[in-house]
Length: 202
Image 1 (cartoon, rainbow, N blue to C red):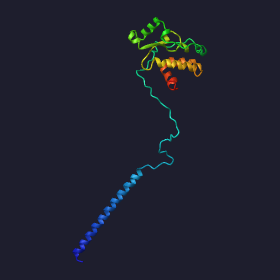
Image 2: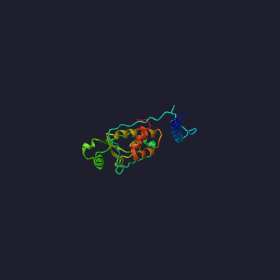
Image 3: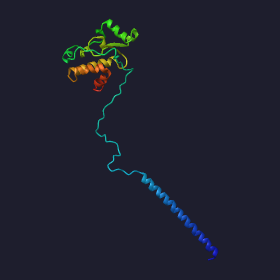
Image 4: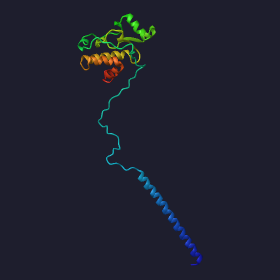
């Protein structure tokens, strides 16, 4: 073999060795990258729950959204504090169920509407005077126990419904008369949600 041919052969071998070296480096780098990616992935913890809870056979509570037109009618606590004449359930349960505005004298009705700034007859027609604590639950007929309940929204009709349910509970001795009176004086709407809606009395 001539010297020139020998040089060409050596150059070819040198280029092949460089190519093989470069390929090995690339393979080694890509391999370490995979190892780093695998190392970054957290190992599974034995016994760790990876799925949601099994709700087979579990009965969830039935929630219901109340659809009402208008707001909630509540008495002014500074004007209508509530007033009771007895806390004896035996006495109240022997009484007839109460009426609404019919039992309230005209002069007293006028005074109560005036306190609530409902002097116009057009405004008064949207309300009915009712007892915060009804007489058949020991409430008095004093002005401090009477307020104008709105006919629209959550108001008069739901309040009367609450009164009847509470009277039944008291007379069955499911709750005390004092508890029923306090619940109405504190917030009759909360009492409606508690004793009527939540208990399925609607």
